[in-house]
Length: 245
Ligand SMILES: [Zn+2]
Picture 1 (tube, rainbow, N blue to C red):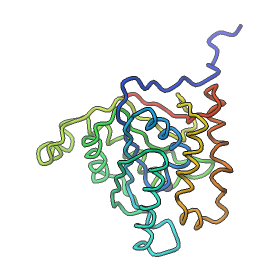
Picture 2: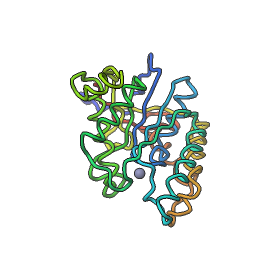
Picture 3: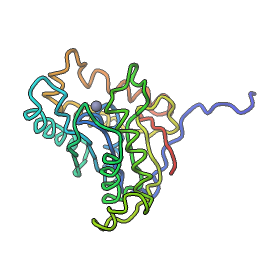
Picture 4: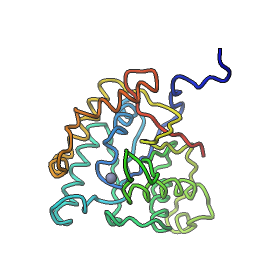
């Protein structure tokens, strides 16, 4: 017998008394590469899930931004419907040029105080991610979300949110980071939610058509979720790094 063996499986995310989860990402489609399977499980369990997109994804296709922004917003709305998300909020920070700073943190903190989530989810914001160099907006969005969750809990930060908008400080319990190379927990999902996640990515019809050689969602999403399941000791799972706040 070895001493202090490394656990064979990731523990399941504890969701006792979780009623609301806020997901903060940079672009339309960012939730659809695995995370939306967990979202489908949460909404099926009666948890209210809000998506906050920091940009409209207008710089992500060949067509002009004026054409692309409403198109991608519509596709995101369909993606949300596939996993039971009714509350979609989209800020209009510039796609591809998301700037780290107080303006972005204030905009996210405002929504944290409006939604009053128990948990906040964002995507991996490390420099290297997904087998390559992480996209600039992804780095900025995730770090800003992490900072803004703390900001939202501090009544002396962004005092104007309380004084002018009546938004009192709100303390979320934990930050969940999806797509992280060192996950601490897993959210097991069923086959039905794997199918819902495939439907959610498939809803980005025009965007997927634009990306050259993008594999079909059904060709790789179940595999990602199966790999997560292998870490969790279940058939399918979304893995998460959980940071308690
Ligand atoms: Zn993105």
